[in-house]
Amino acid sequence: MTTYPAFNPDQTTLPEGAASPIRATTVDLRSDTVTRPTPAMRGAMASAEVGDDVYGEDPTLNRLQSRAAEIFGREAALFVPSGCMGNLIAIKVWTRPGEEVICEERAHAFQYELASMSALAGCMPRTVPAPDGLLTWNHIEPLIELKSSHRAHTGLVELENTHNLGGGTVYPVAQAEEICDAAHALGLHVHLDGARIFNAAVALGRPAGEITRKFDSVMFCLSKGLGAPVGSMLVGSREFIDKAHRVRKILGGGMRQAGVLGAAGLVALEESPKSLHVDHQNARYLAEGLSAIPGIRIRPEKVVTNIVIFDVAGAKKTPAEICAALKSKEVLANPFGKHTIRMVTHYDVDRAGIDRALAALRQILA
Ligand code: TLP
Image 1: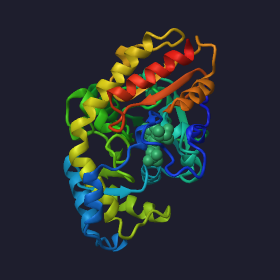
Image 2: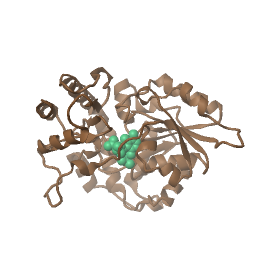
Image 3: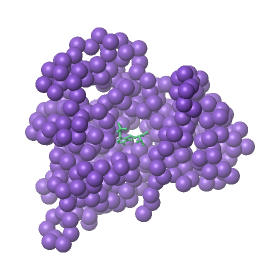
């Protein structure tokens, strides 16, 4: 089974003491998490009406939660500090300690969430590799165990859309729905790590609520391509959200005047999906440019959202060396595997920035 290197943002950050950690001229392609709040978000934050959310009295957060529930066609939603916490809460709500969570081998919840499902929910991941990270029911069915008195029982199925390590790949709706239907027929719940579900929705040309309607719970991030400074959402039934609310508190995620964050989240939710297609166009443009550089291997046609993962096994430098060289040219990217580098497009990087990244790579690999 493949293991993935520790995600090490320090590899590409500037030295301590710098006035601003990232210079305005830097092309930062490490992640869409680096997006800074837009002027509209900052304005909304400054004037947000707030209250104590632990009492359920923050009007801005309540508005954000109602709007998220509405967009996803669900009974309720909950604001959570991070995507990791959102996934963990869902796992804790749907499972009991000692159960297994079936997920793809490169799932974020398995690779990059510090084994929280084991440490804090008492669950064991049961993983299976799938092409481009996209599971089918045929991958999942043989892993399900519901009766044995020897083996751990399946507690939950978890999918990821878009699939980060798969390269921002998108589930065909019918494939995801078949999994949900088949799991439900066995009495199993299905949680979606939809950190970038709006990217998937834009790529499919269908509303986020429609492509996720069969999942029992969905987590999506406001703080990635949507650009909010902090926060993710869980959506689901009233009963699920009531339980999630308690688990959030257990995990220390009860917040007070969180409306200042929610205000940015509301702008992110309403405005940002409209321009994600530009990030996708830039990602494809980047992938096409990369495919013409000797030593780099990538299939541009596979890049359908904002994540670009390319293979540098054919270059004479390691991913870490290449990223260090890029950094000296004020282009930031993350090594993302033994032979791979990841670049993620977002609204803080324009076409000229992509051209700079491509020119820097051409020089480094020449
Ligand atoms: N992903 C981050 C890193 O952790 C790798 C990134 O830069 O892409 N699900 C998925 C699919 C994610 O990509 C991430 C973050 C999360 C969950 C966790 O979200 P946060 O960072 O808000 O806890």
